[in-house]
Amino acid sequence: MKLGLADRILRVVKKQVQASPPPPLLVELLRGPSEGERWDSRSFPFCYRVTTDDQAPVYEVGCDLTQPALTALRQTVSSVSESLDPADVDPLTFGRLVEVLGQNSAEALARHGVKGRVKELSELAAYEAIGLSRILALARDDRVTEFYADSEATPLYLDHATAGRCETGLVLTKRETDALQTHVDTFSGYTLDFKTPSMKNDLPVGGAVLRVSLDLEPLAVNRFQLDVRRLNISSLGLQELIRMDVLSGDAAAMLVGWIECGGNVTVIGETGTGKTTLLNALDEQVDRRLRRVYIEDAVETRDLLGRGYHQAKVKVDPYERGDETGRTKESEIVKALHRSPDLVILSEIQSEEHSRAFFHALASGARGIQTFHASTVEQAVRRWVNLHHISEPSLLDLGLIVQMARPDRLKQSRYVQRISSMISEGGTPRIKELYMRDRASRLRDVAGEGWPRPPEGSEPGKLGEKIALAARRIGGGKRP
Image 1 (spheres, helix red, strand yellow):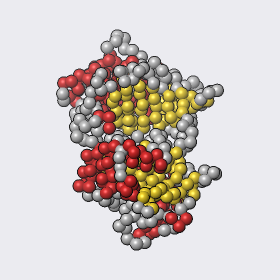
Image 2 (spheres, one colour):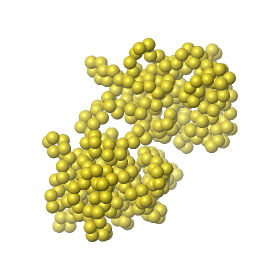
Image 3 (cartoon, rainbow, N blue to C red):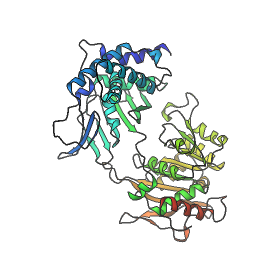
Image 4 (tube, rainbow, N blue to C red):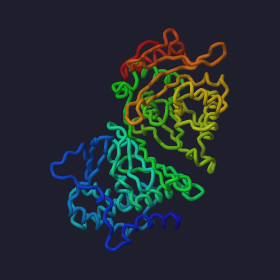
């Protein structure tokens, strides 16, 4: 292990024991629930609820530990922080650091006579030692989809799966903001500094994977900005999305059949409209025997290996890092064909370089599922043609385009607004509507006789056969 990295680990952990007597635990900043008090849910030792005041929903998190448990926890954190040997953190990953601290904490708790809830308390002690115990509390509540801080001095606010945008009374301490910067810096392979004041990294916390994005001065006017997004929040399958009216059963069967027949699907929408949720749901339903190659800068696709799917995942550098290492999304898109994929699944296509590589891959025969940031199909086409300089004939390789919408930014409702195909009319690409939401907000087939033609190169009748098979698996389905 490099000395600099070891020093960083020791610095953030040993801050817990520098003061004498030891400072209060971070979880002691969370109030304990009163006897008989109602909370919406619990995940020991944390409890959660959303209340509503005159203006907005308010999210609360408490910590339900007895005073003897807090005393033992404080002693444990102090002892494991002092005794941590960075040489034990091998390989050097965030997960391994938490694992080592958790193992040491379990032994220390046993010495302090703690017999119950040792697993949960040792995990809590590990995160307390590295300054992220209240982040653990938020990660444990799988209804928290994303949380934010606009400065070091203002409270966190968050997006909740059922309550929408919520305010909180949680203000991060200096120790917590330092810890976030240290861990994102240490385990990303990059360095946060004046020249590079933005950083993004994925950290496994409490069974969730959190994508932590930091902006510091001089970029951040308020010196510190935080955005933490839960990457593996959605386990929603197509059946659940159909029940929630995100899309209809026949539209879902058509998309799955189209992909299995060799067609391409691009999911567009603004931030937070559910693009990745739909991508994951489609991916899960497509025949598991197909070889999938994924190219992502933040791994947001589900791990399906344990269920017999064939997944080869490539993680590239974030777009904002530029071409420092050569692990760019555009280079891996071009190289994807050499990995013999049946499906190429991309995280968001962001830049002109990404778009040019993507359309090059489409022209070379690659097909799959990808996401693209645009409010409407028309806006996506304009962005590709006018800003990313993609030739209009190349748009015909897109296949189907699914437009996601989130009508109220402060609520969680999101759905498929329309499904379109790119067709040739007199040699000119044109958008053909297949499904549209009507005035009653029902997703309806509007294609008439223009229902999607089978993907180029597919066998006659294959599309109808694939749609029928998908309909039997997920429910729905209308016609070939």
